[in-house]
Length: 159
Length: 159
Image (cartoon, rainbow over all chains, first blue to last red; front, side):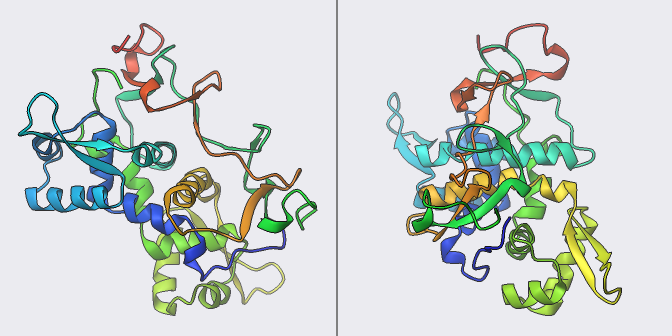
């Protein structure tokens, strides 16, 4: 990764804690997983996940507060409420699938009967990888840090 | 996502919990982040992260137990010990970067002075995306579930 290193104590400059606050908590990721599977109603989250109503209510409120889900009145029945993923929530999917693929690859006895495929051709999706700006697949040892104000001006300090 | 839905209560078939057990705990992901930045020694993890020695020791032991890191004697000083990422650990990087990019995109005031670039051309890496088998970028609404034993035999049930 070159000579530069992140300021490791300074979490305000890292996007990971914000993401893990939403994804890292067990019930929150289970709710998100259900939402990506097309669950909308409080009652359905409750019955599908087997989660206590007070915990579900609390976690949904947090996800709404984080802007990851939005609470909407149903068009056809105004007494009912939908919880839908916002664009911010939908954007968690690559991270969620990358974590999931890792768990499936290395988790030992994790194996799912259902495979995630591209609806167009019915083929399993590809492993999620890191890409350079020109779309080449790259790995850990191809990466370097650069100061924002030096971008485009010089090569990274590892070269 | 089509008509099929995952069995949402059955976590044994989902790779996410295994991944979040390693990544979701605050100190564990900070240790992993430091390891990806080239930190090896116990003393360096301790001073760089400002983490109590007993917690660090406990979390490193867990990461070793999960096969994500490995404990090795230093070649040049046999009294010293290195903690290195295993291939299983290195494989967490796409998920880590996808979470991080999400946090940077939506985290509000998260902004880093350092940008992750491809060492070859010094350009920022691309956003991590979901790809079909033929490398097309696809999104949530392009995905469907298929039974493992029906792969290649028919189109997904949403088509």
